[in-house]
Length: 246
Ligand code: CAA
Image 1 (tube, rainbow, N blue to C red):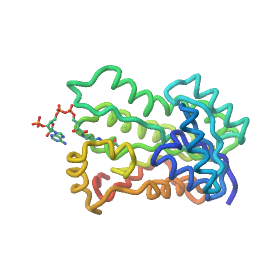
Image 2: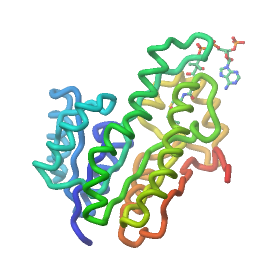
Image 3: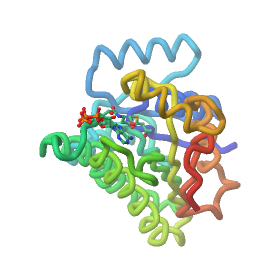
Image 4: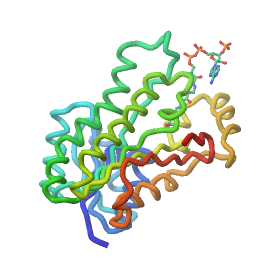
């Protein structure tokens, strides 16, 4: 397999870590961004103990200027980005009638505007080199909506709108753009949902359990292969059967 440079935003998080591991095990050079240097360094050392060297760059996906610096830093340290996984995301769950403007903006900036901030500085280079793989990590809740997540569901649905437009614009340049929409995966984000609420959610999952981060990483890695070059603009639901829209 050709060795590529992959940037996974939010790589230190639950699903992000699994994606970083998977792409690194496939032989790619993998980079991720961080905001908290001490936390990031502890995470990097843990990965290094497992034989995975990750290129760490500072960067806030919600801030366009920071993202330009972040992409330049990745380019400098490990070459131009061939594979971009827009994975960084946050929740600020509350019912809409109580939601503050700040809760709305934080989620839209980090989950959706980040797609502009991070992708804009890499796309021209990908077009010039005539190869690229871009994967958005959206959510089941962008597809079906969720009580308490008007901000998150709006941002996550927007990510797929971004995917299908970018896919059309860049198909002739060897660039594929796809979305993966995970359901409820056992990460800190999902474990932060109050237990009694979470239990009610898990019983709605036909497979009968939360997902594993590796199950998401596997699909992301598939989209990044040469063999997946005819798959673009797709939205792959990985949710244990929780939502079966088509
Ligand atoms: N459908 C109908 N009613 C619901 C409901 C639902 N799905 N969920 C909660 N309610 C009801 C409660 O039973 C309660 O009713 P009563 O007042 O009659 O007792 C009422 O709504 C609570 O309303 P509040 O206005 O008090 O709600 P709140 O502002 O405190 O918010 C909440 C509660 C934050 C929405 C909480 O229920 C919650 O955390 N829900 C889970 C949200 C969720 O699934 N988040 C996903 C996080 S993980 C993730 O996002 C990753 C991913 O991509 C999947």
